[in-house]
Image (tube, rainbow, N blue to C red):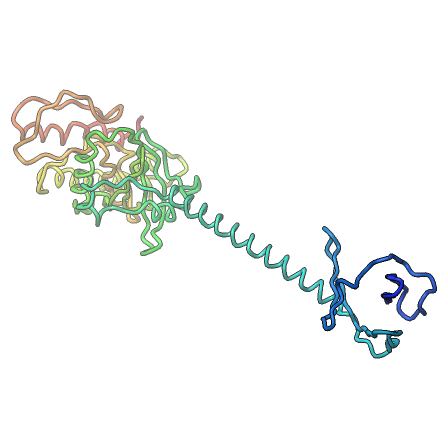
Length: 353
């Protein structure tokens, strides 16, 4: 567009004429008004342009202009006028502004998501750790390691379910060692310190016919015990599962002798007396060479030699539960050693339930 602005100081007339670029000046002005500008004009002054569009956003460009006092201003050479700025440039600026805004919003969302992810991981892998447990540090596993080892305790890794918890198969990523993780519920913290102390002590047992207890982990309402993994499972599955290969008498006697050797070690040969209190076929695990190993020390108790206390509490599971007998400590220990032996032996020999 092109605009002509004329002011007649004699008649005090201000006229504004508008036409498209390249069209001659119209005879009739767009705006004509009587205005006294004598009080505004100075002997020397600067002339400029300004524009306003109210609340709307738009761009105005002055490509050329001419000015003349006391006469007509010279016409503009339209061919020599510069080109208008490209609309693409304006669009690029808008796109840049939008990109920056979206980028900042995305960064904020990512920061919030990262915070929530970290919080969720912290809750998922949270453990219960008290000051008195520091002395058992080497025997304590992190929950994250056990969670990763069992692939999140998936049902596919479930080895079995017992009266005291669920057992999962796993492999430690740090060493590749195969383990069995038993999850035991414990709502009460009463006596937990003594229980963990006994677990730590049992973890020092070393015998070829005992399943090695590697350590533990504790969460709110949950205790996890970590054992060596036995590839052939429990003895009860072998002798009661008709789909498994025949378990001949020689193999059964080998297992029975191994369990007896393990019990002898627990009761007589270690630094303390360890009373297992739950000897049964499901707690006897078989390694790759079908060696019997006594496991699951969840009910086990430790006593000093010659200082075995008397108890009348029923312990163990149905079929193997027992009460301790009165008499000297050594005699009571031997009775405890052999009490569940006949029941276990009969099942191993006859396969009866």
